[in-house]
Every structure is written in C-alpha cells, then in structure tokens.
Amino acid sequence: MRTQWVLLAYRLPREPSTPRIALWRKLKRLGAVQVLDGLVALPLDSRNREQLEWLADAITDAAGEATIWVGELGSAAQERELAARMSEAIAHEYRVVIEEAEALAAQASGQERRSLARLRRELRRIRARDYFPPPERELAQQAVEELAATLERAPA
Image 1: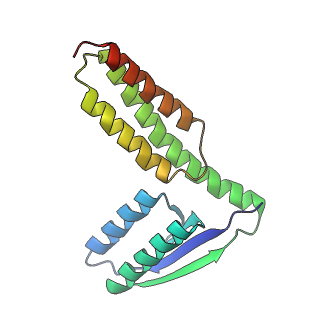
Image 2: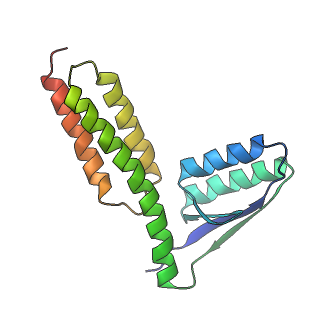
C-alpha cells in the first residue's frame, strides 16, 4: 500500500531571519524531510497535516507564501528513497542516544539518574517523529533500559 504524504511548499523572505530559523526548528522537531528547497514532506495523518497547516499560517504571517499539498509519490522507488532518508535521519538520532547511554553505563556512579530521565525524554521525542522505524530504535530502547538497570545496582 502506498503512503499518502502531506507537503508544505513555502517561500519566506530572507530578512528578518528569525521566522526562517523558527520554521526550520519546527520542521526538524516534526521530522519533516526536505524534498527540495522550500518543499518538505511528512506521512499524511491528521496530526501532521494540522502541524503543517499551522506552519503555513505562520509563514504567511511572516510575509511569506505557503501551500499545503496532499498526494503520493509517482513511484514506489521514490517513496522508498524518501522513507529511507527519513529513517536514516532518525537512526542517527538513535545512535547518539545509544552512545550516550553506553558512556553513562560505563561510569555508573549512581549520579546519572537525571541523565537517564533526559535520555528517556529524548527517546519519546524521537519516537514521535519516527515514521519508518530503523533497527536502531530497539537498540536505543535497550541501551536506555540497560543504563537504568545499571543505575539501579549502583550505590546512590
């Protein structure tokens, strides 16, 4: 079954740069993939569509132009390539979590409880934009669980 996509085509003035930076950060937080300059895509669901509609409103409020599109890619190969790009970006974020959890587990002084809570929050944030889960998803979850177990055994 083919994936439906919601796309945001936009153009913002170069100055002031604040709206461009804010838009870039929000798109990153959503996990949107940059298809072309000024064109981003997310798998279609009501949440993603609503989020991009809000961003489109913010773009027009900042004297820009924005259009929301819904559709599917022309071929299964193009769809696989776009999904793979999204998956690789998320896999990188999971690898960062894995590395940090392993480094904290190696220290295991018991003082890393705040770091454990932060890593758990980071996992939740990554999962919220993980539309095509890579193998690193389970590895990151496992690394954080192992860190928690190690900290439980460590003296407080």
